[in-house]
Length: 473
Image (cartoon, rainbow, N blue to C red; front, side, top):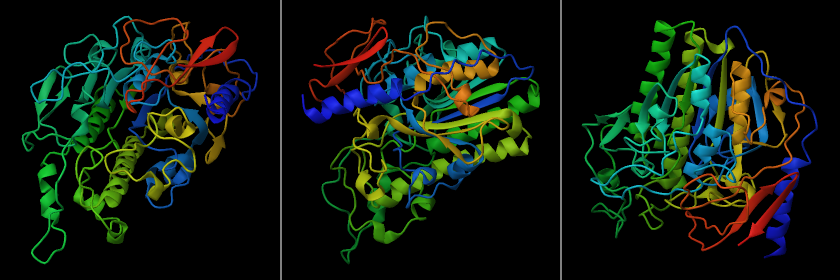
């Protein structure tokens, strides 16, 4: 074990335990009219890829507006360094030493006729949606699920959500032009798209007769029905319907968008917002996923498109008069990726932090996080209290006046959001990636690997009573 790795692991454990200030948690409140909750989670968005966290090239005016009107959490960490376990930790309030889902274990294969889905979240788990639904909330999820395929016990409609629209399967979500999405238990066919693999490579750059790049050579990697637009349209319609049909009932809208996870498939009008001279060469698929004629512009464009959708949500809340009684959270599931044509160095994606998606270094797990809670968060403020995704279940339960399970790993952030210091528990765990979870084990040493990096072994952490520890397998 290198000295640098040893120092890193001790340092993260130290900040999550000792840097927090020892104040008791705010007791659960029971507001007469609980606030609506909109929880937005980007997919593979780096800490420094939005303007309010230092980005200089990619335009994100709506997320920046959210930060100006709310609170930036500058040391907020993901539940894991890859997709599925982060979603499990977020929704169940458990770190990866206790959470059931610890890696991107697949169910099915990569072909169009193969079963969809990842390892399902067991019915016995209690999610944020179930806690809020018991409090009387309408619950909707829109985007990438990744915790159970069609018919499984992990399906979102079996995990507390009244309505779901999007991708049940993470593999299918690699393509922004899929043949279908899912609305609850039913397939929604996207008739303008035909099946093509989201993992292809061009042998040669497509050229015109004069030797210049032929953009039409990349058209084969697009369809007519853009899934992210279908999803945001469904989400906005659902909020409108809730306000129209049940104006006194609070709602929980969970929006785990697939953006900016590769493949690089950006609407042309958003790619065109960025300079042509950014891309002196095209991406032909050398590092997986799909080729793209203008990879830098496409990556910036898709993040700006995501930001545009955040703005559409904020504008709708304004239009319906819901802003003052709605808490909006924006975060990411893990750091920026290292494949698919993404150039982290060009964008300084992690604002100088070491690491990337799949790593337990800061670049893999520190998330750009913004919270706007009118009347509570201080506009334009920031807070450096260490926190992480499992904190959101107890936080949102407290805000809603709901009853949450007693054995959670997360701590309510209500004192932080209300500018009051918060204490942290004496046990915790962020980094533990496993391929084949079957039941919740105790936190103990375990040989693990990182399925996204492919190393046979790597650093893992375990929690023990009243102290932090880690193991290197």
